[in-house]
Length: 127
Image (tube, rainbow, N blue to C red; front, side, top):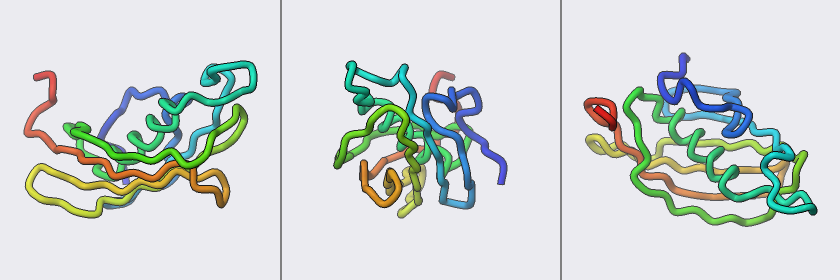
């Protein structure tokens, strides 16, 4: 299935799609030194959120999808060099609204869990 959204996103910062299916995506992110907040190698949570958001957008997979809101829980820290995988599933579709459940894992460890409320607009949000 072709990706219809977020065509110009930096996949080094937001993740590389592995699986794209109807209402589902799996996206992988290799954390790197430019994501670190300190000398210990702690990865900034914004990059983990970006991975989850990217997976949610691809699960919806529409050119005009935008994020309306998100409720997430960060469960464990991430260190530079660790590989993360986000899985996103569209759980509900009502009109323009899409409810997407996302889980980010590092191996068997749960890193982030969240619900993303996305909207499919008639035209691009900047139009």
